[in-house]
Image (cartoon, rainbow, N blue to C red; front, side, top):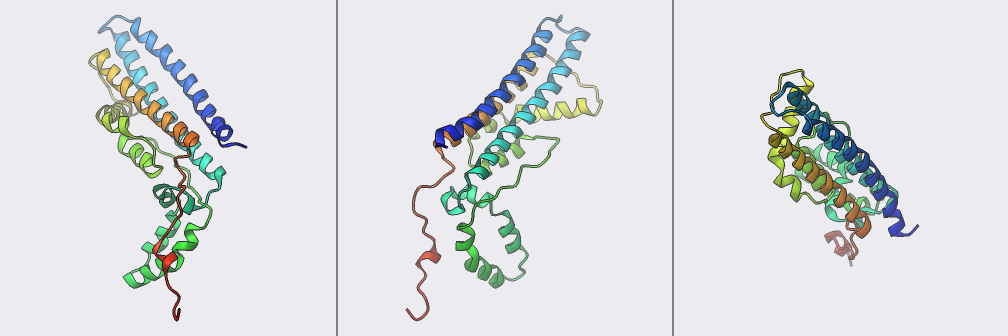
Length: 229
């Protein structure tokens, strides 16, 4: 399968997932706009819109990252053929082993003895796991580990934080009063920017193969001179 065809399969999954989510959000938003300003109905629909918006923000971002990880797994690339940031993300087990050493010499010995072999192995990736609160700093950590774009998420951190906070109050049955539709619009804009950035970042990475390094890997171990040489 060609690289473009491979990428298209995963990008199509992302597009299809985004379409139904945006359609559902549009329906709820339309109902909100049809209510009288400052009415009890408006407050009820504001709460409902916040809860639904958060659900799709979390669900879609997790879906996109999951699709990207699945695509990387299927590529079956060696770590030395990946960008270092992504390769490092796939070496979690190795790093855990190194951390167990109490003495620096033991740490350094294992690191030097095994690094080249680890880089020559096929990269393996853990799934992102479950989370009930997709705070912006958590999303940023995912994007950073996978070397994906994060400019919009960084710029919208305040509103994304408020979205998660507001959703949590609703989820725990607490009374939440959102002052205006404009306040909700700020959450909505932030969530949409984040969702689209994650989607486009994954799509671009797959289509351009930006996860892959094309230069020859040279580590200090490659240049080591055998004893007696």
